[in-house]
Image: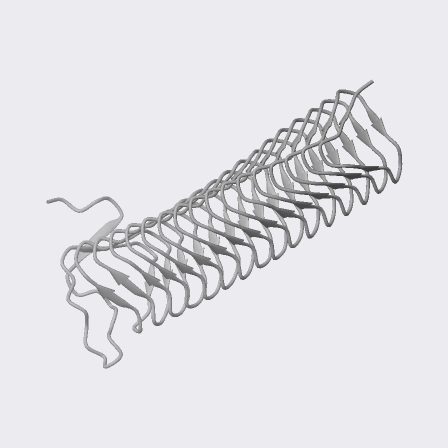
Amino acid sequence: MADTPHLKFITKPTAKKGNGDIIQSKQTKIGHYTEVSDGAVLNGDGITIGEGCIINDGVRLEHHVYIGDEVTLDEGVEIGAACIISDNCIIKKNCILGKRGNIYTNTNIYNDTNIGDDVCIHDHCLIYPEVNIHSKVVIMDNSIIATHCILEERVIIEYNCIIFYGVHIQTGTKVEHSSEVGDNSIVEKNVQIGHNCIIFHEVHIQDNVVIEKNSSIGDNAEIGKGTIIKQKCTIHTDVSIGEAVIIEKRSHVETGVKIEAGVKIGKEVVIKPGCIIQKNSIIEDGVILNENVTIGENCRIYENYVVEQGACISANTQLLY
């Protein structure tokens, strides 16, 4: 077999174990102008390292790893078997990448990040220190994952997203492109967040919630299991929404509102601060609830009705013009 241009085959690369013994590795290829530290470990067959790379002390590469050109691996980095690290990537100290990972070009991964098996991180991403990325996660182009985030198995982060400090995103959740999730928020299992959404700080979104495109969720909001928030909705600070609520598009829920389980809210509804809507009530399209209104259980407020400030509507009431 002929050598690949600008690469050379070596059977005893210049990497050494801690005791100074040279690692035996069949058909390892190292490109021109690449520096492999004496303290690095190339632990298997079929390793390829491109041109102009820097492989520092304590780096460990398992079998069939492919490293592109101009890649830097800092001290203590471990790359699992059959991984691909593309051109111009930088992986900082003590990061661990599991088996069959794929890191695309110009991605930076900072110190002490742990990445599971079968993870794919696309071009121009930034992964900040001490992030924990579980198996089969996909992070697409130009996304940023901040320090102390946790992304559980099968999470998908689409392109141009920002996941801020300390966010925990649980198994099977998808964040569509150009969305943001704020500091210390918790997003539970199988949540769908549409594109151009903003989830502010310390929000708790429970399992199976759907938040459609161009919506925003304010600080400290709580969204219950199975709730659906349609496109272009605005949910303000300190709002509590129960399980299986439906909020139709372009509705506006202001600060401190409480919406209990099973409530249905129509299109272009305005719910002003301090309102409480109790279980299984229906608020139709265009309704305005002024400040500090309480709607009892199983009520129905018909289309375009305006409820005056401080009103208390008893259970099972229907209001219509």
